[in-house]
Image (cartoon, rainbow, N blue to C red; front, side):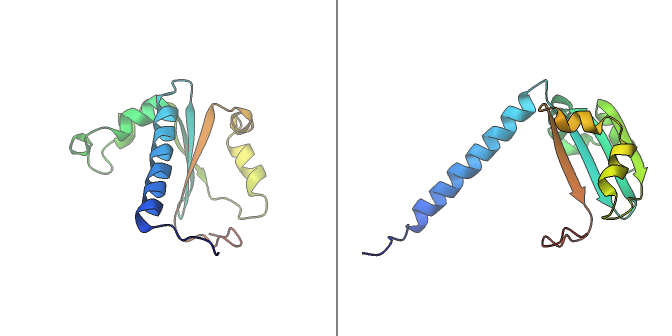
Length: 134
């Protein structure tokens, strides 16, 4: 009269369906020519950002890695940027980060309100998920 335990293959099948749905959603988003991507990198050298179309991101992701230039030899020129990569500088820390970022990227407020813009963030180091501290 207790709960039935799922068999391993049933749980694996459910997980695979979930992953398939996720991949399908990503593919649909990358195919949407109206979608743009605001990417951020937060690391030891400061905050960097760029804006590109989902089509440009998809094209870049499917470039044969053998055809990419070596590190430091103009990889960024392989992408058609809307707003090319830029170094925003060192963020002030947790207090004031949001206002600093809005000042550093003036069009960010419009992008946040625009459902056609999605965001990607890369962080260096470890994140304490309980506090959000890097």
